[in-house]
Image (cartoon, rainbow, N blue to C red; front, side, top):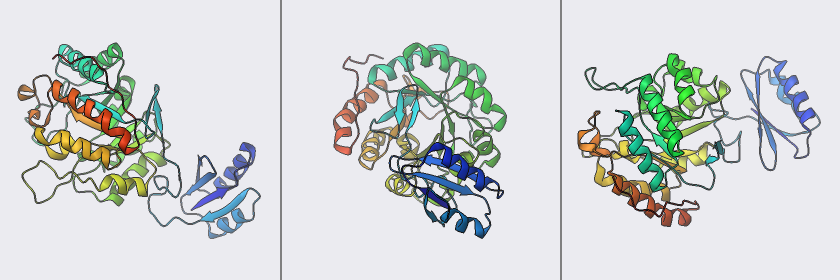
Length: 347
Protein backbone atom coordinates (compact mmCIF):
# COMPACT_ATOMS: atom_id res chain seq x y z
CA UNK A 1 0.00 0.00 0.00
CA UNK A 2 1.00 3.65 -0.23
CA UNK A 3 0.49 6.58 2.10
CA UNK A 4 -0.09 9.91 0.37
CA UNK A 5 1.02 12.96 2.36
CA UNK A 6 -0.09 16.58 2.18
CA UNK A 7 1.99 18.84 -0.03
CA UNK A 8 3.21 21.03 2.83
CA UNK A 9 4.52 18.25 5.06
CA UNK A 10 8.01 18.72 6.52
CA UNK A 11 10.94 16.35 6.06
CA UNK A 12 10.98 15.82 9.82
CA UNK A 13 7.35 14.69 9.82
CA UNK A 14 8.01 12.33 6.90
CA UNK A 15 10.89 10.81 8.86
CA UNK A 16 8.59 10.27 11.84
CA UNK A 17 6.01 8.52 9.66
CA UNK A 18 8.69 6.33 8.07
CA UNK A 19 9.97 5.38 11.52
CA UNK A 20 6.44 4.41 12.61
CA UNK A 21 5.96 2.28 9.48
CA UNK A 22 9.25 0.45 9.84
CA UNK A 23 8.47 -0.41 13.48
CA UNK A 24 5.90 -2.80 12.00
CA UNK A 25 8.58 -4.85 10.25
CA UNK A 26 8.02 -3.51 6.72
CA UNK A 27 10.02 -1.25 4.43
CA UNK A 28 9.15 2.37 3.66
CA UNK A 29 10.20 3.98 0.38
CA UNK A 30 9.70 7.74 -0.01
CA UNK A 31 8.94 9.24 -3.43
CA UNK A 32 8.75 13.04 -3.65
CA UNK A 33 6.76 14.41 -6.55
CA UNK A 34 5.97 17.94 -7.65
CA UNK A 35 2.58 18.02 -5.92
CA UNK A 36 2.80 15.37 -3.22
CA UNK A 37 5.00 12.87 -1.42
CA UNK A 38 4.16 9.19 -1.51
CA UNK A 39 5.45 6.64 0.98
CA UNK A 40 5.44 3.11 -0.36
CA UNK A 41 5.02 0.32 2.20
CA UNK A 42 6.69 -2.91 1.08
CA UNK A 43 6.14 -6.18 2.90
CA UNK A 44 3.30 -7.92 4.72
CA UNK A 45 1.84 -5.16 6.87
CA UNK A 46 -0.49 -5.57 9.79
CA UNK A 47 -3.99 -4.52 8.63
CA UNK A 48 -4.09 -2.17 11.61
CA UNK A 49 -1.20 -0.14 10.15
CA UNK A 50 -3.38 1.31 7.38
CA UNK A 51 -5.89 2.63 9.90
CA UNK A 52 -3.14 4.04 12.11
CA UNK A 53 -1.65 5.90 9.14
CA UNK A 54 -5.01 7.37 8.14
CA UNK A 55 -5.26 8.96 11.58
CA UNK A 56 -1.75 10.44 11.56
CA UNK A 57 -1.28 14.15 10.87
CA UNK A 58 0.20 14.86 7.46
CA UNK A 59 -1.38 11.79 5.82
CA UNK A 60 -4.10 12.56 3.27
CA UNK A 61 -4.88 9.04 2.08
CA UNK A 62 -3.80 5.40 2.31
CA UNK A 63 -4.26 3.34 -0.85
CA UNK A 64 -3.82 -0.37 -1.35
CA UNK A 65 -1.92 -1.18 -4.55
CA UNK A 66 -3.12 -4.41 -6.10
CA UNK A 67 -0.16 -4.73 -8.48
CA UNK A 68 2.62 -7.07 -7.42
CA UNK A 69 5.19 -4.47 -8.49
CA UNK A 70 4.78 -1.63 -6.01
CA UNK A 71 7.81 0.62 -6.47
CA UNK A 72 7.79 0.34 -10.27
CA UNK A 73 4.09 1.27 -10.38
CA UNK A 74 2.94 4.72 -11.40
CA UNK A 75 0.56 4.57 -8.43
CA UNK A 76 3.59 4.83 -6.16
CA UNK A 77 5.44 7.42 -8.25
CA UNK A 78 2.96 9.48 -10.33
CA UNK A 79 5.65 11.66 -11.94
CA UNK A 80 8.07 10.32 -14.54
CA UNK A 81 11.41 9.25 -13.14
CA UNK A 82 14.27 11.23 -14.70
CA UNK A 83 17.73 9.73 -14.26
CA UNK A 84 20.53 12.30 -14.41
CA UNK A 85 23.91 10.83 -15.33
CA UNK A 86 26.68 13.43 -15.49
CA UNK A 87 24.28 15.98 -16.95
CA UNK A 88 22.50 13.64 -19.39
CA UNK A 89 18.86 13.23 -18.36
CA UNK A 90 17.09 10.01 -19.31
CA UNK A 91 13.31 10.06 -18.98
CA UNK A 92 12.96 13.80 -19.36
CA UNK A 93 12.45 16.04 -22.38
CA UNK A 94 15.65 15.04 -24.14
CA UNK A 95 15.75 12.01 -26.44
CA UNK A 96 18.83 9.93 -25.58
CA UNK A 97 20.63 7.84 -28.20
CA UNK A 98 23.02 5.04 -27.23
CA UNK A 99 25.14 3.81 -30.12
CA UNK A 100 28.03 1.47 -30.69
CA UNK A 101 29.05 -2.09 -31.50
CA UNK A 102 27.59 -5.27 -30.11
CA UNK A 103 31.02 -6.03 -28.63
CA UNK A 104 34.26 -4.24 -27.88
CA UNK A 105 36.89 -5.81 -30.13
CA UNK A 106 40.01 -3.63 -29.84
CA UNK A 107 41.12 -0.19 -28.54
CA UNK A 108 41.23 1.16 -32.08
CA UNK A 109 37.77 -0.15 -32.95
CA UNK A 110 35.99 1.26 -29.91
CA UNK A 111 37.84 4.58 -30.06
CA UNK A 112 36.86 5.14 -33.69
CA UNK A 113 33.24 4.18 -33.06
CA UNK A 114 33.11 6.46 -30.00
CA UNK A 115 34.34 9.33 -32.19
CA UNK A 116 31.59 8.63 -34.73
CA UNK A 117 28.84 8.32 -32.10
CA UNK A 118 29.86 11.65 -30.59
CA UNK A 119 30.15 13.35 -33.98
CA UNK A 120 26.66 12.20 -34.94
CA UNK A 121 25.12 13.57 -31.74
CA UNK A 122 24.79 10.44 -29.60
CA UNK A 123 25.18 10.76 -25.85
CA UNK A 124 26.04 7.19 -24.82
CA UNK A 125 28.57 4.66 -26.14
CA UNK A 126 27.37 1.07 -26.03
CA UNK A 127 29.56 -2.01 -26.21
CA UNK A 128 29.73 -5.43 -24.64
CA UNK A 129 32.80 -6.74 -22.84
CA UNK A 130 31.03 -9.92 -21.68
CA UNK A 131 28.72 -11.50 -24.25
CA UNK A 132 26.03 -14.08 -23.38
CA UNK A 133 25.82 -16.22 -26.50
CA UNK A 134 23.36 -18.94 -27.37
CA UNK A 135 26.16 -21.25 -28.48
CA UNK A 136 29.17 -22.03 -26.25
CA UNK A 137 31.64 -21.73 -29.12
CA UNK A 138 30.62 -18.22 -30.18
CA UNK A 139 32.72 -15.14 -29.35
CA UNK A 140 32.18 -14.40 -25.65
CA UNK A 141 33.76 -10.93 -25.42
CA UNK A 142 37.16 -9.71 -24.23
CA UNK A 143 36.24 -9.29 -20.56
CA UNK A 144 37.59 -6.69 -18.15
CA UNK A 145 40.08 -5.46 -20.73
CA UNK A 146 37.13 -4.49 -22.91
CA UNK A 147 35.61 -2.50 -20.05
CA UNK A 148 38.82 -0.52 -19.75
CA UNK A 149 38.95 0.11 -23.51
CA UNK A 150 35.40 1.41 -23.59
CA UNK A 151 35.79 3.55 -20.47
CA UNK A 152 38.84 5.21 -22.00
CA UNK A 153 37.08 5.82 -25.33
CA UNK A 154 34.01 7.24 -23.59
CA UNK A 155 36.09 9.59 -21.47
CA UNK A 156 38.16 10.73 -24.44
CA UNK A 157 35.12 11.61 -26.56
CA UNK A 158 32.81 12.89 -23.83
CA UNK A 159 30.30 10.03 -23.89
CA UNK A 160 28.56 8.06 -21.19
CA UNK A 161 29.10 4.31 -21.47
CA UNK A 162 26.80 1.31 -21.14
CA UNK A 163 27.84 -2.34 -20.98
CA UNK A 164 26.19 -5.63 -20.14
CA UNK A 165 26.76 -7.35 -16.81
CA UNK A 166 26.09 -11.08 -16.69
CA UNK A 167 26.71 -12.26 -13.14
CA UNK A 168 26.52 -10.81 -9.60
CA UNK A 169 30.27 -11.29 -9.25
CA UNK A 170 30.98 -8.83 -12.07
CA UNK A 171 28.60 -6.07 -10.97
CA UNK A 172 31.17 -4.10 -8.98
CA UNK A 173 33.90 -4.21 -11.64
CA UNK A 174 31.45 -3.29 -14.41
CA UNK A 175 30.08 -0.41 -12.30
CA UNK A 176 33.65 0.80 -11.76
CA UNK A 177 34.16 1.25 -15.50
CA UNK A 178 30.69 1.96 -16.98
CA UNK A 179 28.04 4.64 -16.33
CA UNK A 180 25.09 2.32 -17.06
CA UNK A 181 24.84 -1.43 -16.56
CA UNK A 182 22.71 -3.44 -18.97
CA UNK A 183 20.83 -6.61 -18.03
CA UNK A 184 20.31 -8.68 -21.15
CA UNK A 185 17.13 -10.48 -22.12
CA UNK A 186 18.46 -13.86 -20.97
CA UNK A 187 19.13 -12.44 -17.51
CA UNK A 188 15.88 -10.54 -16.94
CA UNK A 189 14.88 -13.11 -14.33
CA UNK A 190 18.35 -13.78 -12.95
CA UNK A 191 17.17 -12.78 -9.50
CA UNK A 192 20.58 -13.04 -7.83
CA UNK A 193 21.91 -10.55 -10.38
CA UNK A 194 18.90 -8.24 -9.94
CA UNK A 195 19.28 -8.29 -6.14
CA UNK A 196 22.95 -7.39 -6.45
CA UNK A 197 22.14 -4.50 -8.79
CA UNK A 198 19.74 -3.23 -6.15
CA UNK A 199 22.63 -2.72 -3.74
CA UNK A 200 24.41 -0.15 -5.93
CA UNK A 201 23.35 3.22 -7.31
CA UNK A 202 24.71 2.82 -10.86
CA UNK A 203 21.82 3.16 -13.36
CA UNK A 204 20.53 -0.10 -14.83
CA UNK A 205 19.04 -0.72 -18.28
CA UNK A 206 16.83 -3.78 -17.87
CA UNK A 207 15.97 -5.55 -21.12
CA UNK A 208 12.68 -7.37 -21.45
CA UNK A 209 12.92 -11.16 -21.64
CA UNK A 210 12.02 -12.41 -25.09
CA UNK A 211 8.99 -14.26 -23.69
CA UNK A 212 8.17 -11.95 -20.76
CA UNK A 213 4.82 -10.34 -20.12
CA UNK A 214 4.63 -6.70 -19.01
CA UNK A 215 3.84 -7.88 -15.49
CA UNK A 216 6.90 -10.16 -15.39
CA UNK A 217 9.06 -7.38 -16.81
CA UNK A 218 7.99 -4.85 -14.19
CA UNK A 219 8.37 -7.38 -11.39
CA UNK A 220 11.97 -7.92 -12.52
CA UNK A 221 12.52 -4.15 -12.25
CA UNK A 222 10.93 -4.31 -8.80
CA UNK A 223 13.78 -6.52 -7.57
CA UNK A 224 16.29 -3.75 -8.31
CA UNK A 225 14.10 -0.98 -6.93
CA UNK A 226 13.30 -2.91 -3.74
CA UNK A 227 17.01 -3.41 -3.18
CA UNK A 228 17.49 0.35 -2.97
CA UNK A 229 18.57 1.36 -6.49
CA UNK A 230 15.98 3.79 -7.95
CA UNK A 231 17.86 4.28 -11.24
CA UNK A 232 16.19 1.73 -13.50
CA UNK A 233 15.36 2.01 -17.21
CA UNK A 234 13.13 -0.44 -19.07
CA UNK A 235 14.17 -1.61 -22.53
CA UNK A 236 11.85 -3.13 -25.11
CA UNK A 237 14.09 -5.26 -27.37
CA UNK A 238 11.61 -7.49 -29.16
CA UNK A 239 9.82 -10.68 -28.18
CA UNK A 240 9.78 -14.17 -29.65
CA UNK A 241 6.76 -14.89 -31.86
CA UNK A 242 5.95 -17.27 -34.71
CA UNK A 243 7.40 -14.83 -37.27
CA UNK A 244 10.82 -15.85 -38.66
CA UNK A 245 11.49 -13.02 -41.13
CA UNK A 246 12.74 -10.77 -38.33
CA UNK A 247 15.02 -11.87 -35.49
CA UNK A 248 12.35 -10.83 -32.96
CA UNK A 249 9.06 -8.95 -33.05
CA UNK A 250 9.55 -5.41 -31.75
CA UNK A 251 6.56 -4.75 -29.50
CA UNK A 252 5.98 -1.04 -30.05
CA UNK A 253 2.82 -1.18 -27.94
CA UNK A 254 5.06 -1.92 -24.96
CA UNK A 255 6.34 1.66 -24.98
CA UNK A 256 3.04 3.47 -24.20
CA UNK A 257 1.84 0.55 -22.04
CA UNK A 258 4.96 0.66 -19.85
CA UNK A 259 4.63 4.44 -19.57
CA UNK A 260 1.05 3.96 -18.43
CA UNK A 261 1.88 1.27 -15.88
CA UNK A 262 5.21 2.62 -14.64
CA UNK A 263 7.11 5.84 -14.03
CA UNK A 264 10.45 4.40 -15.24
CA UNK A 265 12.11 5.59 -18.48
CA UNK A 266 11.50 3.38 -21.51
CA UNK A 267 14.22 2.69 -24.09
CA UNK A 268 13.74 0.89 -27.42
CA UNK A 269 16.24 -1.46 -29.09
CA UNK A 270 15.27 -1.79 -32.77
CA UNK A 271 18.56 -3.53 -33.60
CA UNK A 272 17.72 -6.67 -31.63
CA UNK A 273 14.02 -6.04 -32.12
CA UNK A 274 14.30 -6.62 -35.87
CA UNK A 275 17.72 -8.14 -36.52
CA UNK A 276 17.72 -6.54 -39.97
CA UNK A 277 19.71 -3.44 -40.81
CA UNK A 278 17.20 -2.19 -43.36
CA UNK A 279 14.47 -2.06 -40.70
CA UNK A 280 16.39 -0.43 -37.87
CA UNK A 281 16.06 3.20 -38.94
CA UNK A 282 12.31 2.93 -39.56
CA UNK A 283 11.68 1.23 -36.24
CA UNK A 284 13.81 3.79 -34.41
CA UNK A 285 11.53 6.52 -35.72
CA UNK A 286 8.43 4.48 -34.91
CA UNK A 287 9.74 3.98 -31.35
CA UNK A 288 10.19 7.72 -30.88
CA UNK A 289 6.68 8.31 -32.23
CA UNK A 290 5.39 5.75 -29.71
CA UNK A 291 6.96 7.74 -26.86
CA UNK A 292 10.36 6.14 -26.25
CA UNK A 293 12.68 8.12 -23.99
CA UNK A 294 15.72 6.82 -25.81
CA UNK A 295 17.14 4.35 -28.31
CA UNK A 296 19.97 1.84 -28.14
CA UNK A 297 21.31 1.18 -31.63
CA UNK A 298 24.07 -1.05 -32.92
CA UNK A 299 26.60 0.71 -35.15
CA UNK A 300 29.87 -0.70 -36.48
CA UNK A 301 32.51 0.56 -38.93
CA UNK A 302 32.74 -2.91 -40.52
CA UNK A 303 29.57 -4.74 -39.52
CA UNK A 304 29.97 -7.54 -42.04
CA UNK A 305 33.16 -8.62 -40.25
CA UNK A 306 32.13 -8.01 -36.64
CA UNK A 307 33.43 -10.61 -34.19
CA UNK A 308 29.94 -11.39 -32.85
CA UNK A 309 28.44 -12.14 -36.24
CA UNK A 310 25.56 -9.73 -35.52
CA UNK A 311 26.64 -7.25 -38.18
CA UNK A 312 23.47 -7.81 -40.18
CA UNK A 313 21.60 -5.67 -37.62
CA UNK A 314 24.31 -3.00 -37.21
CA UNK A 315 24.11 0.34 -39.00
CA UNK A 316 27.05 1.77 -40.93
CA UNK A 317 28.34 5.10 -39.55
CA UNK A 318 26.73 7.17 -42.29
CA UNK A 319 23.38 5.45 -41.71
CA UNK A 320 23.67 6.15 -37.98
CA UNK A 321 24.46 9.82 -38.61
CA UNK A 322 21.58 10.21 -41.09
CA UNK A 323 19.21 8.55 -38.62
CA UNK A 324 20.14 11.01 -35.89
CA UNK A 325 19.63 13.94 -38.27
CA UNK A 326 16.14 12.64 -39.00
CA UNK A 327 15.48 12.23 -35.27
CA UNK A 328 16.38 15.88 -34.75
CA UNK A 329 13.37 16.77 -36.93
CA UNK A 330 11.08 14.09 -35.52
CA UNK A 331 11.73 14.49 -31.80
CA UNK A 332 9.96 17.87 -31.35
CA UNK A 333 6.83 16.45 -32.97
CA UNK A 334 6.81 13.72 -30.30
CA UNK A 335 7.39 15.94 -27.27
CA UNK A 336 11.17 15.46 -27.16
CA UNK A 337 14.26 17.50 -27.95
CA UNK A 338 17.33 16.25 -29.78
CA UNK A 339 20.24 18.05 -31.41
CA UNK A 340 22.86 16.55 -33.71
CA UNK A 341 26.28 17.76 -34.70
CA UNK A 342 26.34 19.56 -38.02
CA UNK A 343 29.74 18.25 -39.14
CA UNK A 344 29.79 15.47 -41.78
CA UNK A 345 30.67 11.93 -40.65
CA UNK A 346 33.61 10.17 -42.25
CA UNK A 347 34.27 6.55 -41.29
